[in-house]
Image 1 (tube, rainbow, N blue to C red):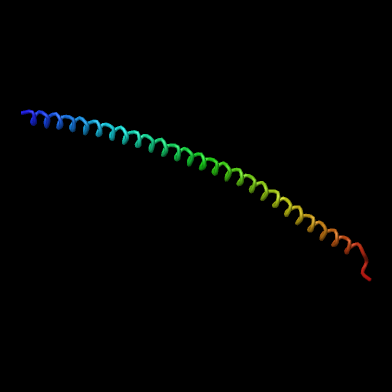
Image 2: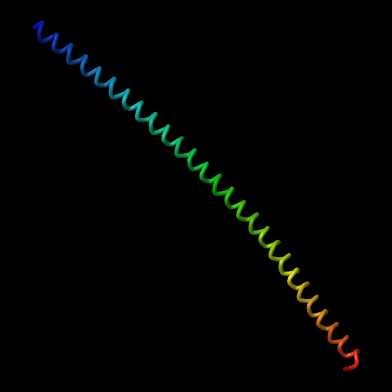
Length: 100
């Protein structure tokens, strides 16, 4: 009888120990999942911030490029007008001078 009681007691302790271990493992798993989720959210937030920064930088670069192109177009137009005016002035000068 005594042996049977001891065995029942051992079995009960084993069951309690196993239940405690399972509860502990469940808590560890939940903590790990929560930590992973927090880490993934931080990574996603950082990724969105980098994307926003890249977009803003690209927009600023496009504005700058557009302004540079406008300045270049105006300079080319001014140069072409100066060339045309110089050609016109040479033609007028040539008309005013009598042939030799």
